[in-house]
Length: 315
Image (cartoon, rainbow, N blue to C red; front, side, top):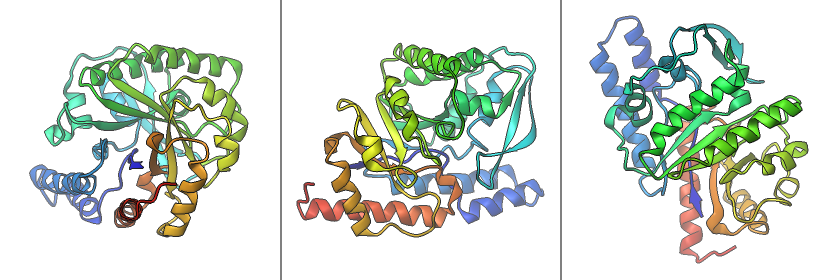
């Protein structure tokens, strides 16, 4: 049983305060970068025994914003509620869709200015098509595909990576035939990349009606928020050759998961899938929680998995 973290990892209170001080010109960029590095290194230490590690996407203000930096003439303007949370995303307004050739984007955002290496086994989180479309204007779905494929193409050269696509639109809005056709086309295009595994992760909403369509999208793995969905209804038709991102870390509650709850969850999941195909993960968006709480939840899960191994537990 393994653990994977994904999404934007929450910043520490120290980093939040340092960012505010920098914006008020109270500290230098060098001093701010030093606090960023402390936060990132703490996350690296937390994941020291993980197979795949997230770099936390600390330099992302939100999951869409960095993509504006590799397209000509993009404005970041206006606020829109992030689904049904109390958070808001800036809207990307595309006025001229032309990709830039500058590769600094990748080094800064995905390798944290060199704190992570291209050769490491890393996890990145991208917005899927409908998520991207919901928080952008002036860009077609085919252009979103082109943009995502451009970035993925560079990352795929690094080898041995996982990209988790976030898509809360499942269960939130009805997807028409054209939407589904675009999704299938995009997933087929992903087959051209040989060094990257692709997972689709849904959260926030009940997606049981969309499960057959989700499984028709030929990803390497699928992730679900099991606090919003029934294990039985989601897992009954789960493809046996795929990986599961099992959302057991509740990102909508500050309560630490009880050992008994985690064990019961694992026992139920194991009835549908081999344990080697399971990655325990956050149920949704880690950045919604305070850093201290998220760290405690991760350490708690690490300890539970460690105790189960020590006890030769084999559900």
